[in-house]
Length: 377
Ligand SMILES: Nc1ncnc2c1ncn2[C@@H]1O[C@H](COP(=O)(O)OP(=O)(O)OP(=O)(O)O)[C@@H](O)[C@H]1O
View 1 (cartoon, rainbow, N blue to C red):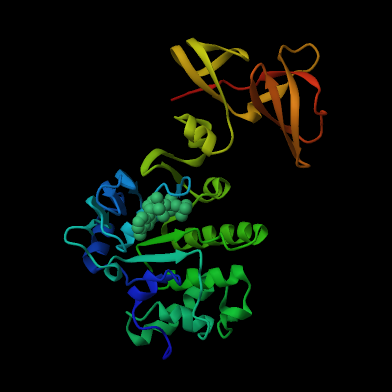
View 2 (cartoon, rainbow, N blue to C red; view 1 turned 45 degrees about the vertical axis):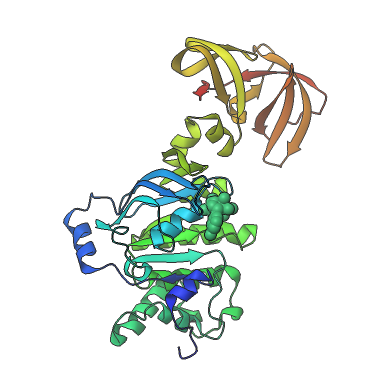
């Protein structure tokens, strides 16, 4: 520990490591205990711009996170995901709005990062290379009485399954193991809230998948409330209890992954979370006339509409089934499934089918819709 850099704040500013700030103040913890149904994090009308005259990168953001929830912020590059985390952590100051963690207001007067009870894990988990695994985890516990530190560090290493590696140096571990050390360091002080900024993006595809599952299980087991930032839609769908789709500093849609995927409210969400065919049409109640024929609608609508049809909700019609004639113009075969691009008039649509029946490019086929379509804004 003697060679460790001096302040946690410097460490955070460099984004050089995962770390955890001190546990929440007793008053905050008491607020959570008194009312377990109260949100652990409550953000209201949060607005932030980095320079006067420039449009805000976050605009009137509202978010409530319940204790133990795993939330994902998902959105295109530059939509304000990291800024949101940095504001929650106290590494940036909002222009207006409020942030309450465990019932305690963080913005007015501003509570410093190390007193917010927030843990952070970044994508560049860069552990202190000269410290052992145990030393790295102990580093996150500097605020605790000396006597309890070792026991707490070992307990947390056991939680992330790294007890046998406690004497190793970071370079003697795989990327996934290093990220678990970073997680242990952030979790060891038992933060009220853990913030994870693209923590899996430095890992290769297979390790990324297994580490994500492990981290999720660890967070569940420890009952940790966490917010994950990613622009990987599969990660967002697999990881979170609720996901927040962000666009240009605003929340576009929020809900459990399966609900947001199945019921996108806007064309943006339909296309950002998964792929979608967007068709214009005219609705009359529970049906809309489109280039694909009369489509059943999930909910009644009237007049000009835009409908979303997922590629997996289109299928090739078999003999005797009705369908709209299209031409296959491209094919992406992936073994267990296939995505076709088909031309319908001037528009290209995507059709997703299982991989056991493969059609050639140029083939004239007919497509039918297998699920009610969704009207989007
Ligand atoms: N310190 C800063 N000074 C000025 N502008 C900034 C600063 N940090 C971020 N921005 C700008 O704010 C906007 C939001 O950035 P932010 O990093 O929050 O987006 P993001 O959604 O996390 O993006 P990514 O997925 O690429 O990490 C971007 O336009 C970015 O260029």
